[in-house]
Length: 352
Length: 126
Image 1 (cartoon, helix red, strand yellow):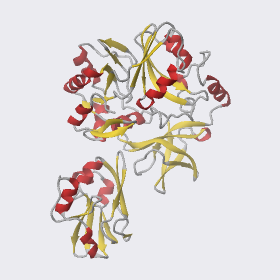
Image 2 (tube, each protein chain N blue to C red):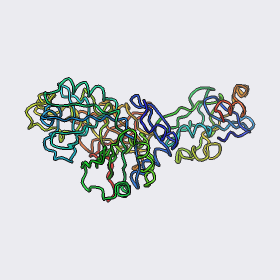
Image 3 (cartoon, rainbow over the protein chains, first blue to last red):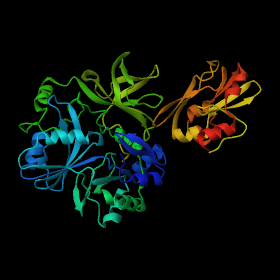
Image 4 (cartoon, rainbow over the protein chains, first blue to last red):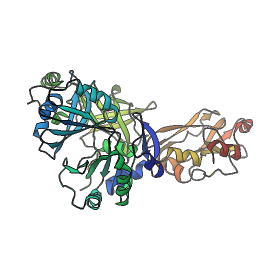
């Protein structure tokens, strides 16, 4: 599949790769350069492959609250929140952002690989009066990220970017939201698919540099933002993933609640930990064994060379007893082990 | 894409410069462009025996690890420590400062199986 920006990527020198069935740019100028651009200036990512669901009708808010972990009802119109969709066992089906557009009008942005599964799951649980529309093909989206994103916003929209995160502004048939996946200031611009190439050109003309999925991955990993399918999976709960903040147990019911409550009472047996290299090593990658005291105790779910820190970083589910910051560990790469240490999240702190 | 005339090339994108009984091995301009940002290089140890077509070294970009296959058999007589310290040399000067190792050829006849510059240019469409 191709997003409406496929030709724009090729024209900009994007190196196209398969991502969840989509032909997406992994990089243009290079992952290190694009990473630095987002940390120091401003970059733009095509996130049109992600899914857009619109939920409306009487009872839409209560319905979302009965399905997702976070409380959509706590959002005022114009606000957004991170939330999760769980199976009955408390494992993660998908993580998503819920945007409240009006009283009973919501926009959900879900992962590209999960659009069909999420849509089927939600439609199979539809409540009377609630309208569910999967409009993923109708919309494109651009993520403009970096300390200079405010200037792009001003040039595009003629006013200052909202200072608060998770704010939604409706613009014509599209939306601008102050969300992102990089740890930098920025906004995501959801626009009708046909308008995407023009919007992309305007964003570039305002000074943003095109960035690919490679830099998106290193940026989010430095912040320890989980990637579904790697760090999140049906076999692990949000409590194990360190996302308890986004689970509202005061709601009476949602899929997975009972399992999570039991896990909360008993204590989790493993935790998604951040790891950092303590010595020079080859770049870390996903699925490398993690050892403590010579025993394999887990494997990296994500791993990369951190362009900001210049060393290996990773996330891995480790036994709860070995999950505290300061815990010494090792990563095995091609038969050799390299010293590592469990870190407090996020791994990267922006210099103040 | 630069394909110097004084080298021979393996289909797997290594080059070799032969001087007497010693060859200097690196990766081509095309290979470094495909790999992009090279952030790690591990040349083989001096004295290590290498075989034509077998893995002799590893280089890694941000996105992927890539095996380097020895174009010839022999014994490693030199390793470029500069690329270990600064792997980006493989990107900026693949045919010069970015060389990876030197090998004393045990079977110079293997050179016949490598591509000349014209054949390698044809392979990469240069």
